[in-house]
Image 1 (tube, rainbow, N blue to C red):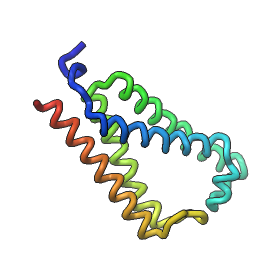
Image 2 (tube, helix red, strand yellow; image 1 turned 90 degrees about the horizontal axis):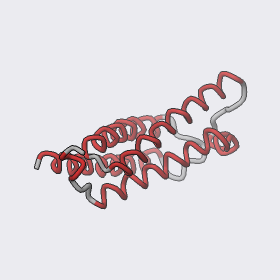
Image 3 (cartoon, helix red, strand yellow; image 1 turned 30 degrees about the vertical axis):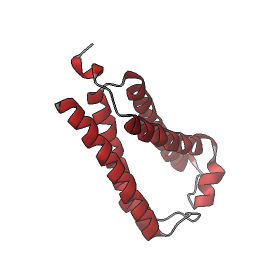
Length: 137
């Protein structure tokens, strides 16, 4: 084991990561098994080309879930940084995309959606900084 794996990831960072895993698992379930939920959002899921895109999105999201579960298990701070960085980039993109292209059944307005994502990204950046500082000690 390297010295970094002996460092303890803060509990709150683990909790944030578990919440993100649960959100992504919900998305994976929707992509693979609940096309009606996607249809309710206004996404057309009919035809081979669209199903191809939907299943690819599900597969890519599932890979992020696997990587996230792996870092929760290993508690390796350097690997945590990689997963947190992936989450920051994903949520930052969603922060722009979701308000520009809102879904039909969005629970909040586009501007509220933007600010929710700002808060999520801020928490993820704080988690990244906390783990980065832990490594630099």
